[in-house]
Length: 355
Image 1 (tube, rainbow, N blue to C red):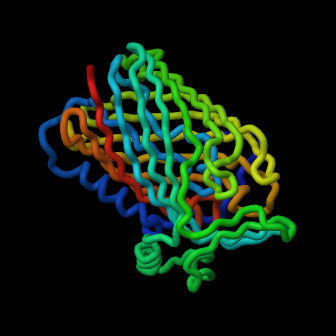
Image 2 (spheres, helix red, strand yellow):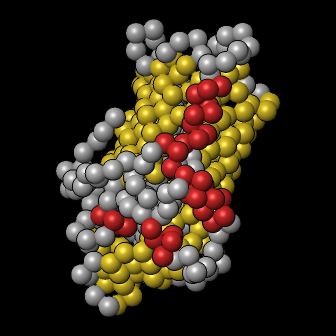
């Protein structure tokens, strides 16, 4: 699935990483292998949902994130609480005639997401993120994976002796910087989703959703964009067989203002996911995500390049109303290029109160 941004056309890359070059892709192979071996009796195709992935790139995540979601809405008067912790490693080292950037840090994003069934087909929600930027804990894992694949991240190699770096300048003037161990509340987002169609044998479930982001985060600390955003999207889901469910999201986000003098374009994103029900309570998910960048014309991959990623993970229903999941996200461009974050590892729990 591909979506074009009329405000920005991504540059095609000449190479794509081999499968064994990605920290996240070995997990995808394991998931696919598990789906081919003996399993319990066929489970009813009642999916646990796609992965709630968003663009975790440090500058992209400042804008409204319409994360991966299913088309189904929660029941009327039900309250669902999700707590997610995502750790993202970012490393960039590049310069253009106007922009010079050095970044090497990890961001721990803890999100509290509440959604409520307002009507039979309508739910509303709010997300409150807490961001913590630090030197990180994934360096050893990522480096060991790159060595095993005999492929190395150029910026990571050049910044090998640097524990923490966060500096972006334009025409010699600093526009972004931040201290290690910085922590703060990010921009709070509000959401709504209305299910237009329920799934039928000949058609998928179909919902429309919308969101708005309030500028509550500290822009100077890079915990917020300093301006509101609005977004709209659609979500579809369809059972393909006894154990397989497919999901798709298409979204558009429209940021207001600028970011440190950098003009902003609309952001378009799409996800496609396949979920395999190993049992009625355990599922495996393989997901592709594409995001356009809100920036253009800087001459750097950090700002100008779109993001194309693969995410793999599992859902586990611990109890009827309690869900636990783990997933990893890896970009699909060659090492050292592209606008994506290096790697993200995330886990979340969801609990639903029914009335």
